[in-house]
Image (cartoon, rainbow, N blue to C red; front, top):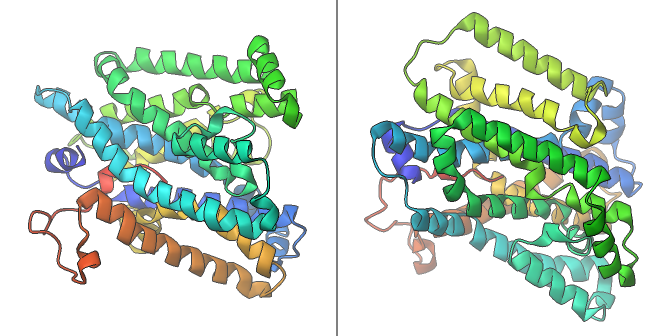
Length: 414
């Protein structure tokens, strides 16, 4: 499918850079939050606190996840609009699912082996192996099936990689996308309105309603003393809570396909950028007008505006910055970066937390970058392209893949 997008539209240069920004925001957010919670006196965090505006941006870095969701909707929906515009049949559902599996499962499963076999024993010692076997098996099964965001016992990935809940949302979205795309192609704005209503209703229900479900979950988790707050936190990270993000990305893809080749309006683009900055400023300063349960909806609009400005920009400085260099590299390895950044940080804090001073952050980022690149090069790319030549001791790719473009449009994940 991604090949179809490239054939009909071409490479979307800024996408890698946007994904790189999203990944770096999430990494910075967790670096500050995790090390602060551990009581580690990090000079970078201390310096950051002396610049309130920058500190606010980093502490809102979790919004990188929201940008990832928007990108997923945008990139994965584009082929349906391309086919509809050309009057051809919709992309094949089976092929879509097979490509999604090759894209996310191998690297994810390898990370799970790393997590359960190495990280958890190193963090918890030998008691990990003597702990409640039921908890371990439940977590292993839930993570293998991308259902880790369904209970308080699994949503935190045993305290070793709490960022994995987003992968469950992504995988569940993949299952639904081929089913809902005909609706979005026929009636994009009504479909977006329905998705936004679902998201708002679910967010409210997660915070204040769904009482029967909450009580059932509390009863199920009585052995582990699940509280109502624990259950509601899990409800807040279910797929319906992010339906508006994903749907907005889908609708932007349709608008982008329909407006290809049309002249851009500089004044309108400048106004959109100013509005987006104002919305983010309201978020960062704590002046978001919406209730807490809907707090991600306003920055979602700002991030969607920046996504639109980036993918519709003509070749220029912004396009070159996002389409090449360090941000593009960070974008290419962003999925593996996301998979490994939290467990690596926890191990770093456990075994070398107070060492390094100013060198701790650069050393952590260098180690993370190396692991992410190795995972991208030898797992992600190999399975997506079917290129396992490195196992045979040669760098030559199969003849059918030589000269094939990078799978950028398929790389919607972090």
